[in-house]
Amino acid sequence: MSASLAPGLRTLRTKRLILRPFIEADAPAFHVLVSDPAVLRYTGESPVESTEEALEILRTRPLRDYTVHGFGRMACVLQETNELIGFCGLKRLEELNNEIDIGYRFIRRYWRLGLASESAAALYAHGKTELQLTRIIGLVIPENTGSVRVLEKLGMQREKAIRFPGADRDFDQYV
Image (cartoon, rainbow, N blue to C red; front, side, top):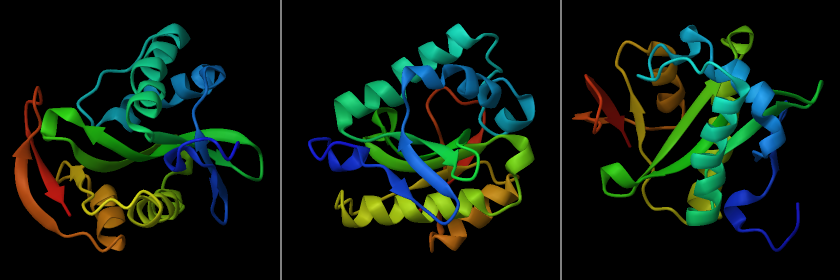
C-alpha cells in the first residue's frame, strides 16, 4: 500500500492473515459472509440477497468509513490461499457518541481456529499505537460466548449493558 494512505488503511500481516482495506472487487466474497444466517446470528442483520447488495454495503460502510474517518473494518485474507474469509477492525459508531468499536466476522468454516483473536489483537494494537485511540469498545450479545472470549483475550472487560440505536435487545459493552 502507498505510504500516502492514512495510517488506518495500512495493510497489516499476522501469522496467517493479511488485513487490508476492502475494495469493490471484494463484493462476491463479501456476499458469502453477509448472506449466511449463522454468521449474522448475533448481529441483528438480515442475510444479504445479492452481490449487488453486498457491494452497496461495502460502499456505504467500510469504503465510506475509510474516506470519512481514515479507518474502518478491514478484509481478512488467508495468506495461504489469498481467500477473503472475513473482516475485522475498528469502526467509528456515530450512533454511540463516536465510540470506536472493534468487530469481526468470519465465514463459518474458519470459526474456532483463533483467527478472530489473531486479527483483533493486531487491529486493536494498531488502533492504540498507530491511530493513538485512547478508548476502544467491543459490543457483543452476551450469548455470543465466542465473541466474548475474543474481547477478553484483548484484555477488555464488561463495562455495561447498552441498547444500540435501532436494536431490539441489549448488548454488553466491553472496554
